[in-house]
Image: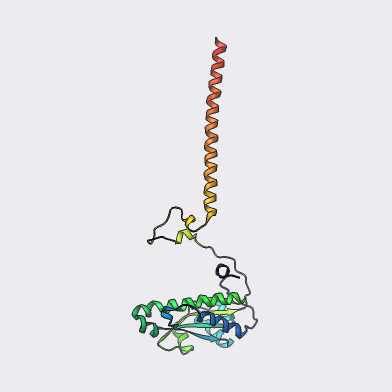
Length: 230
């Protein structure tokens, strides 16, 4: 499976079997997160791995009672060390870069899990204060997300996506190109346009021929009637 195929076919998995998850796979998933890009290569993400079932199930009450939290075989709590980014990049590092760095690591882990046949789901809805206390997260760090892991017990279909042309601009926000599909190399749209154009031209030509034939018929009929009178 190549990278583009993995990106397009990965799905969020919210139903898991009770098959235990091998720890070496969890390690490889975390390693993929650690290879993500980060601002200035500061790598200010931290990963708390939970495999104890009692602890996992206790998280259920602090994550809006989401069933995939309760049934997960492992959970990774992704934290970002805010002070590290703030020290290098000031307020922007504190407010933005840490979140971006952790998000990049999370996406890497989701793709790695998919490659390994492991179901995963990115969770952002949780009681941050409770998570902080449960896992002793220090004040200089912030829980950014949870990733639930387990072997899939479902096969979700592809979600609907907006057309690429509707979310892509050129040179300025909101600026579109008339034939965006050609820029994005979606030639199927151009083929459809050309076919529609050809059909329209054929219809117009057919109408033109019909009108010409009608006039010719009227003219011939008129001449024949005139000859009869003569």
